[in-house]
Length: 414
Image (tube, rainbow, N blue to C red; front, side, top):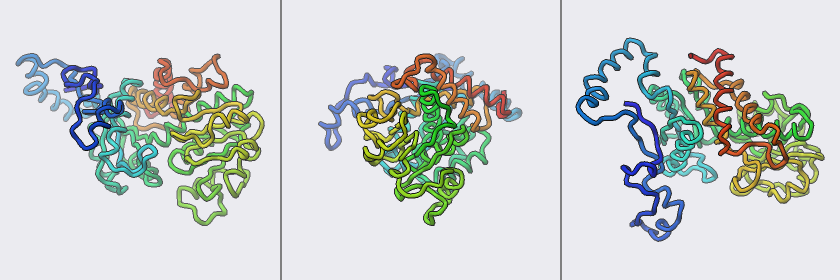
């Protein structure tokens, strides 16, 4: 039986009407009257059948004996699973709860509200069904083996909130092992939206990506992915800083991931602190938290871009950034130019699933970024270099671009 994931508040049969129910657990007053708890009570999603089961004839088709015909056909021709089950339109949203939002390692159960939220965003913005899966294991081998064993039920895997550096190895091994798209959104979704905004900021100021020198604060999952993606897209130069300063080849304390990063970034050979690297830089991209001194922002090149994306407190407050920068973006919804992953991942997966892609390639991600940037079109302005997540043109544009790129690259199977 096929099914679709829905918000339970839209289905009276779930018993939820969107109002807070009485809370009987400790601290019940706070849980009852806080609107966030009221919205989350009972979870944010449910499963709804897409075929009727009204009488014995329906039952005999949806289940036994009719279902046996479909099972036998799939056993003989495995590719039919895409046509006669939900596999081709559903994604597993998988976490181990080790790097949830800014909360850190809070465990699998505490991560479930975020995974449910991700699933309903998949549906709301991309029309893609998604199932939240929180794993009670953190070892790389355990996660890879577990997800691989779950994979026959899904058309794609979205890895979420898995701490670095394990997230890199987990994604790489799953991509090698599975023939469905595997995508770590903390890395690649952030990188796609950042590139789209950066392309438009450069266009607004009459420059190309190759004219820019960037500095990224943060060498975790997002920072590493953004750096690699910007290099792939043709940025002039980019350096990445962690807590100990610029990631450079002369440092002896680098992890394997950071050693690789040092070998492909920082053509200028910068060393020392983040603040020193910002002198004369065209772009600041913050994905680390912390605070960047105003003096360092003031030292950037004329017409600079400040993308301070830490939540809830940007590394550079927009009021400060606007004193020196031509374009300012954050990760927050209450300021213009929000760098929000929801602009990318629903359309990326929708496009990949549409053509039954075996994987999501760099070309497909660049196509997504270009399509996202193009939505802005002639309305480009300093406070509008990236569209709103609620712009109905976004998901269709990204979906079409990703599907076309998959076909052109030969990873599409229909």
